[in-house]
Image (cartoon, rainbow, N blue to C red):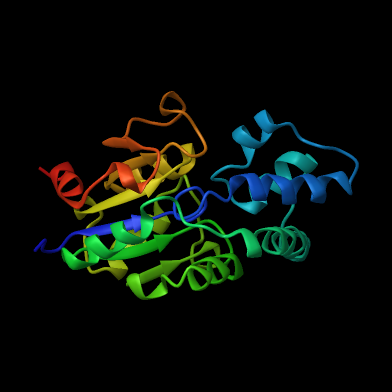
Length: 219
């Protein structure tokens, strides 16, 4: 059994392939305001970014405070309405979580999403019991690519970041994991391999990796 190792999972694009549904929610949100960003703009300025950045970028002005909370609630409510009946985990996720837990890994979720999104997904998929730590956008001061969420997650697991492997799909998320000092496995759900920083391993889903292969990342 593995001793003192952790696996930390981003949520959007990792636990579930939610980005197409976030794009749909943002399109509805921005269409109400008179414009529709392209898929290329979403790839550059939405995937892996926090809502403050996304709103400020696309609205071309600072969005913060009460306005940020109001706009975030509008957009995330749209996302949850769209995605609630379409939730599905990435292939292989459930057996992979089970095998990691059985091998003695401590597991965490570290997402830039707000807590109601996480609650809907991890409870809808019935996977909350796998995780020893859960952190959302409300739990950090500095968002990805800052490593805060991964450093805090490792601390919650009672581990050093270098004893953890992070599963991420976005440039900012991979950068955060690497900056924290963790090993990073890149999920190719949102970007190509060439679009991500250099990871220890790249996979399309969890049927492409085993627990012994995860252990090998530390050797």
